[in-house]
Image (cartoon, rainbow over all chains, first blue to last red; front, side, top):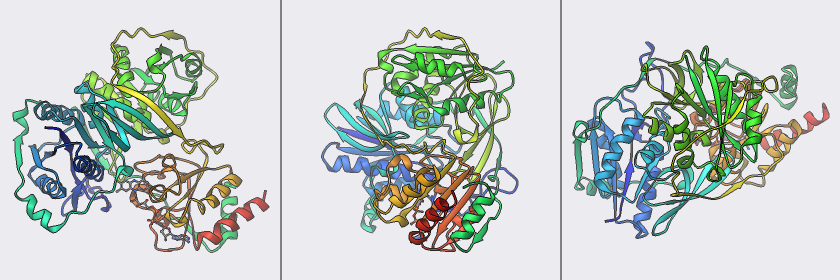
Length: 249
Length: 317
Ligand SMILES: Cc1cc2nc3c(=O)[nH]c(=O)nc-3n(C[C@H](O)[C@H](O)[C@H](O)COP(=O)(O)OP(=O)(O)OC[C@H]3O[C@@H](n4cnc5c(N)ncnc54)[C@H](O)[C@@H]3O)c2cc1C
């Protein structure tokens, strides 16, 4: 069966303005709205479209984390994924460990394509897809804004600093998504009901034989340096005067 | 003793300014010895540029036809082959470095620190999370090799001209994958200053309404010798090309002057401009969040303000 594996992560919703705890021990997460990482939602949407075009037969979503991330797996199933895998871990997972875990799943599921978001908007690491591709010894096409599949290869347009780069990668391959790849669909109520019946498998992380290493310790978390409150000017002349005073024009 | 290997970014025979910023970042580690590696089809000119950067002890060139285009899967094993004597491997936090460095980390079984904005010691680093709404200080376990991408907006470029580091050919004997092929690059050509290094940047947002209307931004930028940026909404709508996007998922910049025109100031956009010296906001909504971070704010219709601003600036010259 031609499978696509999609990784998703439960993160603070992108509309939430994240605040640092006063004691510097982390950020405030209590009662904050959680969602699927926006880039991962785009990854799932792309996989679903590929399947709907008849170029894949099954879309499998996977996440790693505590029990509550099953909510996001259910949302992914409601969007249209066929089944879900929850790698259960209550400890934080560093990107390289996450890539090792995904590689174990890749060995088991044998997908022809793995699609991940280019970064998750909590840690902003932008590492996991590239690391998985290397551990798997397969090509990567990161920051994708367009994906065209043929039988043995994928032609991918990538958003790079200089413009748009196109590369061709042999399959299987890892693709990571950028924002303009697609616009994810909205979940409809009947789909949420249907998703309840779709298979969701839970695997304790220990069963995968990957050692959970913590090699990077967070010593403290601080708010960013605050900018001083500026001033309002009432018209263009005042603006130009203010810029001149600062020597900027 | 820290030995730091920096992977040079270059294009068209020229060193990208991000490399000189990585050198400055590396030099924050006391006693660091710094080597710059140039992977190219023929890298002599780029290597010569790198050898002139203050603080560089050595430049290594690895010339190979397969290095004509910077494909991460092809370059990563070559970097890893050179990495044995080094304690750290650095690259810029540009799309080049973001694509490449994690692959190197995976080969070396090393942790990676992304977007490093300050370096406190050989094992202690500062980096942003949550779109720069929180800044963490991290300690990497002793003994591990450390891979990092350097947030270029956080470091000055190393001085050039006063150094002449030795250049040597690197000996890299690894099999290179053939599964990834370069097809093409559609690069926006312009004479404007590069967005990532420009001292002044003017950005337009969704309010511009069309690619045609966006021309007033280019026109003002020309008068000021400024680079041009855009919000995601403006890029998504096709008013500006993707390489102009400023923000969490676009470019992080630190110009002397940033003028945001018709941009609301979403968290993800502000991430990209937090290090700008002076932020000017022009927006018709006095409640727009951009005014919370602006040093100078002007409430009004951009379509009358921008031409007037251009006129007054031109008149004052
Ligand atoms: C995961 C993720 C990553 C993202 N990354 C980025 C990123 O890197 N960069 C980025 O920019 N965004 C990013 N975004 C999008 C971001 O959330 C905002 O949607 C976007 O920045 C809004 O762009 P805007 O300010 O141009 O548009 P809007 O929010 O629509 O603002 C338009 C503004 O123009 C003003 N206006 C309208 N007409 C006029 C007029 N005639 N004169 C003056 N003012 C006028 C309005 O008052 C308004 O404030 C990201 C979003 C997500 C979810």
